[in-house]
Every structure is written in structure tokens, then in C-alpha cells.
Amino acid sequence: MGHVARLLEAAGTPTVIIASAVFRPRLVAMKLPRLVLTPFPMGRPVGAPGDMDGQRRTLRAALELLASARAGEALVELEHPYRPGM
Amino acid sequence: MNAEDESFVDFKNSFNDGPRRDLNFKFLKGLPADEAAAFLQDLLWKLGDTLDDGDASRLIAHVKEWQARNYSGAVPRWSYEEGPFTPLPKPVSESRLALLSSSGHFVDGQDLRPFGVENMSQEEAAERIVSFLRTPPELSEIPLDTPMEKLRVRHPGYDIRGSQADPNVSFPLYHLVSLVQEGVISELVDPAYSFVGAAAQTPLLREQGPEWVRRIQEKGADGALLVPV
Image 1 (cartoon, rainbow over the protein chains, first blue to last red):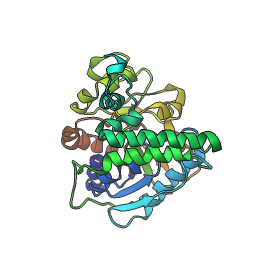
Image 2 (cartoon, helix red, strand yellow):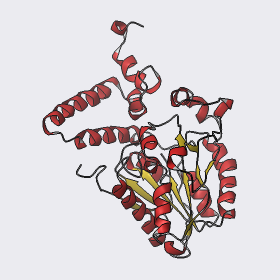
Image 3 (cartoon, each protein chain N blue to C red):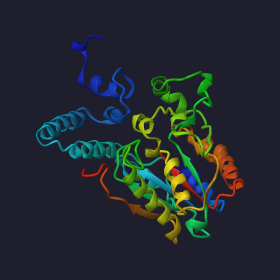
């Protein structure tokens, strides 16, 4: 997906990636334009199943970064719990 | 093989590509035996704590920590000195956004039938992981009005149970549709897109990627939300 982001961006379409922080080293190495890292397990990058509020928080953060970034390698690390109360 | 004859190395490796395949714990194969033993011992110890206080967050943290270790040691295959950047030309509330995930979702009845196989199961996909990694990816189109119960998911590289239970965990289409209705986003590109991210990367970079960029741009996207799994 990192390559798709780089291709889109080079062609003039801004991107933001939401990914589990599990993959941090390989994502950071790709010098991606905008990256939201979530503290969630593999396979659940946006949030836990059924946690609508947490998932929306992740998406809101991504949309904010999409709009606010002024240079590449913009990185936001989210810290909200995988499930409420955890 | 008799269970009595099974070595610990065989046991830990079987979570990746053996009879105990469990993609949440496929990293066990990449660990030296002593580290895999430490992971399991700590997991059971923390489970004991959870029996007493019901707090499963320590189990989730433990699994995440060891999943991350799996990717922290090796030198990344793809590394760049710098990257392209394009600013968003207008506010999100005035923008038309595309969604692209590598989750492996598709619409019921529109399976792309990898390797020509009808109704490939998740288990068969996981068994064919090496073939997937050698094959260029294909893009599934998912219309914005697709009912959630019509979505299917299959992927050889991760545990899809969360994505089955709630597609939004990896393919957040339904939240984005709500955000359009609320005026946070102006519009979404119709359709949304998903593909199996466990695919040959060089063809993706040189062939499918540029083609997908063209398709997304032809839809008038001002920006794109990308979700690797």
C-alpha cells in the first residue's frame, strides 16, 4: 500500500494511510506522505470490531492529517485504547 | 507425526504454515525457540492474571508487542531517501475522497476467483500464501451502497475474523458514508476499492499501481484514504 500512496502522491493526489503500529519500521522506511499509526493488533488497523466510537476517532484523525500536513512524512500516533476501558 | 515426537520448533512453526495455522501468531515461526517459549510463557502468566481481575488489555498488549517485534528486526525491503508530497487543495468538507484497502474485501457474487478457484475458502487462501505473494494483485470494486451483509473477505496473510465481524476495522466504508451524510466529507469516489495486499510488489509498483492511480483520478478524487492490513 505504501507504493500506491507514493504513486498517487507523485501523480498529484494527496493520501493518508491508517495502519497498525505493528508495521512501523517498514512504513516509516517508505517515506510516506501522511501516516496515522494505531496501537491496534494486526488486521484491525482502524479499531476493534464493533467499537464505532474508537473507529470514528481513528478516521477523524486521518482526515485531520490529510488536511493539515504541510510536508511529507507527517506522522500521527494514536493512543486511544483498542477497546473502551482497556 | 506423533504428537509425542513433535519438537517445540515444529510446534511453534505450525502456527504459521502447519496444522495449527493462526495468522495472529504466525510470527512464532520467525522467532528462535527460546523467544517463542518466552512469548508463550508470558502469555499464559498474563492469562492467569486476567483470570483474577478480568483485565484482558495486558493480553492484547502482549500480542501487539510480539507482532511488532516480528517486523522490527529485519531491514525493510522497500526503503527510500525521500517521498512525494501533494497538499490537499481544499478542505475535507469540500473534497471527494477515495477509499482503498488491502483488506481483501469483495462483494458477494463478485469474487475475482484467485488462480481460477471457485469459492476459495479462507483456509485455502492461507495455504496458498506463497502463490499470492508471487501474483500481481487485482482490485475489487465495492459500490458505496453495498449492504454490509453482502461484503465478503478473504486474505492469506492476516486473521480475517475481525474484518468479517465488522468490515469497518479494515475497510471503513460505512463510517465514511456517515461522515459524508454529516458533511465532514463532501463526497466519496464510487466505488470503494479493496485488494489482497499479500501480492507481488514489483508488478504492483510498475503496473497495477499506476493503473489504479489512473482509475482513481478519473473518478475525480481530491484525496485518498488508504488502509493497509
